[in-house]
Image 1 (tube, rainbow, N blue to C red):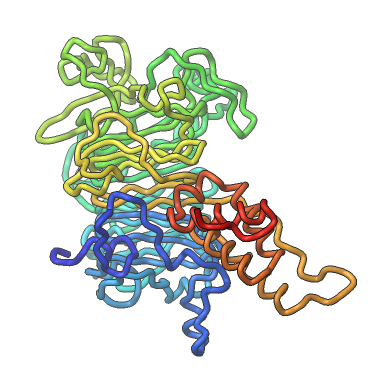
Image 2: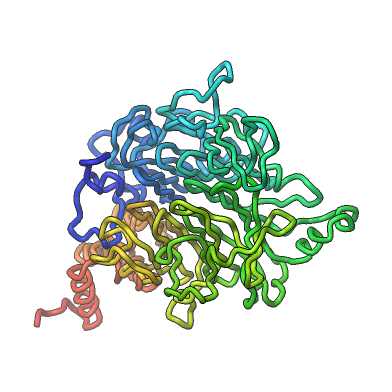
Length: 565
């Protein structure tokens, strides 16, 4: 992948951007139905064209996947090993539709990894493509003797046909699927225990902290979460190079199970979600215990608010050496290694952050580790040894400190990105390039910092050296072209079509053109759009377009064209 320009991963046609720290729109997803080939379309071109707005995005080291609202899947970036799913290993600097078996199916969930990709479709099936060196595509050779070669185009994971998969995640060399029943399936590399199960490779029983060095080419259910007196139903999954993270609902116990396990009964009595993780040398899922001191608000599902002192996680993301979670009240918690990836201030050795020196002993249940300060921690590994750290609140994102309520989070190898409910994007961490964090010339940012010129963000996906962001807008009602009693004119019909393609970036020049052409319906629609999305329009539009729009608006207010000063 060396020698190629960064634009190949950004969907910008391979062009270098002198101001690459600024978020840059992928033009293929910019326009609506007006994005047509007027010179002569063909069924093949129409089949590959972007027909609806982006709805989901996943970014990896070398490529990006985007699923549209209609269920079409597009990929762009470096195509080595078939990770793009376009049928060859060529690079694609511009978004290219992934066809094959996905040409007739709607994609609902996507996950991009370093050398492979996974997606789930609306009918509950899972498809994978790219490298299969560790069995991460979910199938083996015909004789079952080992991992089959990689794929240049999507192939269905046959072992999951009996389950209805809602969501997928992908680490560098393993894949994860979550079903509608809340089951979690993993397959691929298991050298760090990232599959959540022990693949027998020799005699004797493994210790709780021992992982298998074997890969698993076929999906296997994580029985620890599904068996036993209480089933833990997953609602979200995330995967990284060495680990897997799962968000589960509170367990529901039968009366017999509740009396037989006091620990499980106590856990089930808490009306809050839980986070389980495995990997980094431990194949046993371990519950992450959040620190006390906060009270979560009632969840959107109608579940009552958590007890005082309980954190109710609602979203999770894991990276190579750190993890991130969002609570029901919009707070962000991080744990793992490297302070700059955690978004917290530096602390002395005597601080409450915890470290290897605090490690006391594992609890008898095997789920958690007890440390000297009485809290519990998830096991982790970084650098050359083992370490532990407890989830800690990212104070810099609190509303009272200028932040906001977090709604979306994504963690990459060395940096973290969070979207708040006001549509802002916050990043922190480190990067090799000076544009990854979204701050001009900044490669190291220890505490959360807001990315300028980003408004109305709804979702984010962070990769090692680039970040992908979804931005939304509020659309006013379309003008009624068929105004009674006369039939619509050609101008009114054209204005209606143009209104369908108005967005944050083009509304100002479209409004200026509508005034010049004396098209009142289009002018009114653009003005309504600007009023509803003023913050996003100011951030996305150019100064020249804004000056022209304000000048024309002032001229209308004065009853004629504005005069130059």
